[in-house]
Image (cartoon, rainbow, N blue to C red; front, side, top):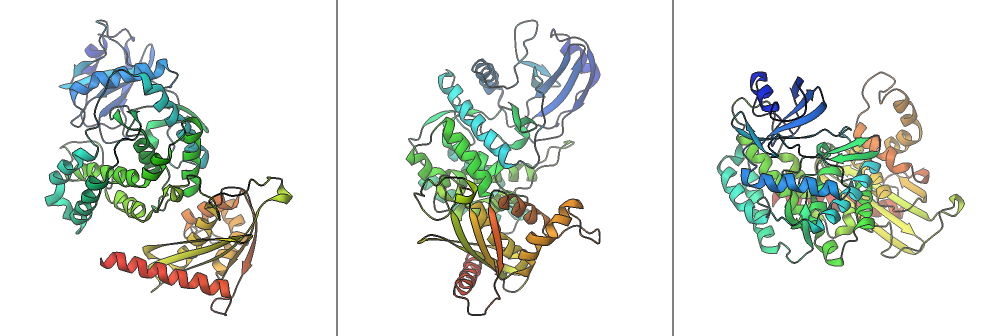
Length: 486
């Protein structure tokens, strides 16, 4: 939601007079979003949302969107309802734009979704897909793979204004997606834009879904891929597999995914990242004069795209992911009978700061799993934190964990310093902001389900597992350098 077209009170009052919703008391623009102009309207009958449809929403598609909201509400989905005017129409014109009034939903959108919020979103998305199964109208997705080439051509010549090599990045990815895009997966109504600002919560309870103006008929699991992009990345653009697992598990519990949907999820996630990269890039380069909204950064989706390109399977998103085995034993969850996992972690940069890598080796009985990753620019401390975070987030069940690290910063921080940091509102004893606070918060959340003993191992002292982890870190850094130079 946003405001591109302003509306004067002397124009709004006669427009509202055509509806049986009372007299205008007050109204104000809603700042979030980038697509349409939206206003919160207060009348003597209550609150309503007024939407003026802008350039990316075709007027011919509006009957589909408005009918869909009515249909979903009749199937138990809590979403805004179009308000009919005195002539029985849901669509009118205001300030030269198509316009509609819909009912107001209670709730607030969540700027930093938690694991619980992601789980609630997964269930709601699956319920939406099931509720739309018998919707009779159809609308093709104009912003799917068949339309991306045209979007690219519209911004190719100026892409360098945002990032020097951006046109090349997009062109290469577009070639891959056009060649490999999956067909024949289950289709139906998808929301196609279910970002956090389009989902309302009252506490942890999801209270409603809004902004259906990109809804269309397309591959259902593509909608899941869009939500993984929108909900499961942290502010530093790292993927939070705990959130991903919660979203996917909750979705699959309501609408199970087929093996082929799971197989194609990584490619669909790449496509979702490219779609939003392209539309954000166009908005960034072509803000309408007088617009009252700041366009969103397209480079956020370059970073997400890089992550998806490294994903090997849906397990990397948290779908049926486990710490050490494809088929883990169903162990009881009594606290003194928790599965015991040993983890050895390491992280570093060369130089520091500079290209960084992290690694973790997890062992459970006679089984082993190896995780590693990296970033083009980081620090030793951040990579040490990422190693522990990613290892703990990969555990599907609560566990007893012995975690071995050669980082005193990591061990002292999680065992001692973090208690005072949290008590002081994430400030140090000197009242300075805690460095790497977003990673410390994430580690704090990843630790909570488990019983963990933290062990310090002197680095480069001949400890076999520490040396193995160190070698994996160096390999991860080499991989980062290779991608950077390619």
